[in-house]
Image (cartoon, rainbow, N blue to C red; front, side):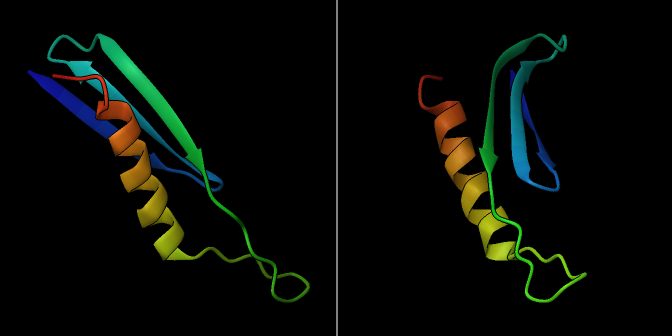
Length: 65
């Protein structure tokens, strides 16, 4: 059986595919933008998190049976 883990970080989403022993089979990372609408502000668009996480999962699983 395989499991995946997702880490939504400040500037990217990192995804790992591992088995029940913890052996890592595949990893991927997808970056997303930071927005600075005003001085001292830092924002992210949650749609970017979602879109890059889904794209990362597709990339992660493309060669997995």
